[in-house]
Image (cartoon, rainbow, N blue to C red):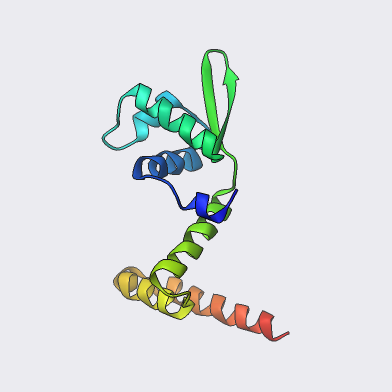
Length: 130
């Protein structure tokens, strides 16, 4: 699956993928019940088919139901989205992106979370120096 493809989802497609990632697998009805301001059932089915054709979902048939699951891990999808975010908004600057995230959420970061971030940066630096 190409990087471009991973970042080429509509709002509804992203909502569906988020639900499927959270549930690990889901039927169209389950997705419709969890999606905010849900479209009709036939629209959900159409979006699931689109996501399947794009290579994001696969399905198995259990009785009369199709059960959908992601074809790539959430971690891979997250990395692709972050890569696109870095390229698009931060000119590939990790420093600028991390600074923006810290500024955005600085009031929400606990001392433990802040210290964990510092520790992660230090561990990454140490491993690169070896």
